[in-house]
Length: 389
Image 1 (cartoon, rainbow, N blue to C red):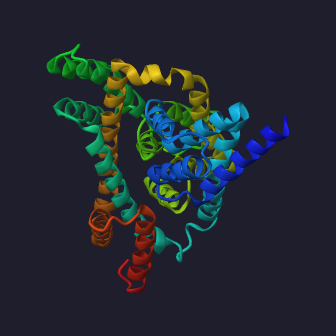
Image 2: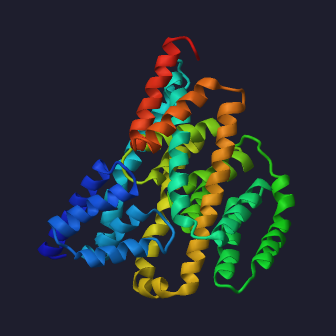
Image 3: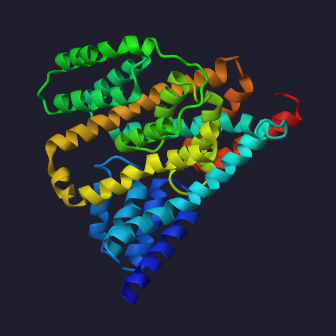
C-alpha cells in the first residue's frame, strides 16, 4: 500500500473515531458533524454528493449515520476505507456501552443504583414518545398511511411477529400506494396474511432461558437486515421477540438498556451490545453487535452502484414509505405496552409525574434525550431521599 493510501486511511480513522467519541445527539447531529468534517473542512466531496448519500441511506436498512460513515469511508479510501470508517465510528459507542453493561450486571441490583434507574425509565419513555412523534409526522402523508400503520398495529396486538408485521405492511402498503389494491382489498389482505401466524403467536412461550449464541446473533442479524427508519424501531423488535416471545430479557432490562443508550455517543443501535451482554455475557455482546451492524457494511458495498435506480423507482419508494409508516405503528404499540407496564403494574404516580415532566422538557423546551435521562436520574434520587419511592 502506498504512503498516500496509508495516509488517507489514517485520516479516515482519525476523523471517524473522533466523530464516534463526540457523536451525541442522534443521527441528525452525527450527519451534521460529518458534513462539517468531510465537506466544509476537508473537502472530500461536495455538498450535492453528500446530500445524495443522505438520500441513499434512507433507501436501505440500517442506521443512517453509520451508513453515512461507511459510504464516506468507501468514497475516500475504497474497501479498506469502508471498513475503517465504520469500525472507528462504532467502536467508542460499543466500548462504552459494553462497560456500562458490565457495571449494570455487576451492580445494578444495589440499593444506591436502583433510584437512578427508577427515575430514568419514565424519562426514557418520554424520549421514545418524542421519537414516535417525529417519525409519525414524517411518515404519515395521507389517509392510506394511517390505514397501513393502524393495520400493522392491529397485527402486533394480535401477537404477530414484528418482522412479519413489518413486511406485510411494506408489501401490502406498496400495492395500496401504487393503487394496485383498493383500500378494502388491502384491509382484507392484511387480515388473510396474518391469520396463519396468529395461532403460532398465541402459543409462544415466555419461559426464561439463555439462548444459544447463534440464535441471539441470528436475531440481531435479521433485525439489522430489515431495520428501516429510526434506530428506536429496534426497541420494538426486542420487546416483541426477546421480551414477550422468548423471555430472554425483562421489560425492566429493556428500559434500562434504552436508558444506557442515551448516555453513550454514536448510533442508538449500540444498545444491542448492552442487551447481548445482559443476555449472554461478553460472547453475547460480541455476536449481538456484529449481527446488528454487519448488514450495513454489506448493503453499502453491494448496493452503492444501484442507489440512483432505487431512488428513481416508484415501486421502491412506495415500499419504503409503507415500511416507514409500519414502523411507526410498531413503535406506537411498543410505547403503549411499556407505559402500561411502567405506570399501571402497579399504579405509580411518581413514575407518571416524572414522565410528564420529561415530556414537557422534550416537547416544550426541546431538551436533548441525554439531558432528559440525567434529569430522570436526579429526580429518582430526590424522590428516594424524600422516602417517596
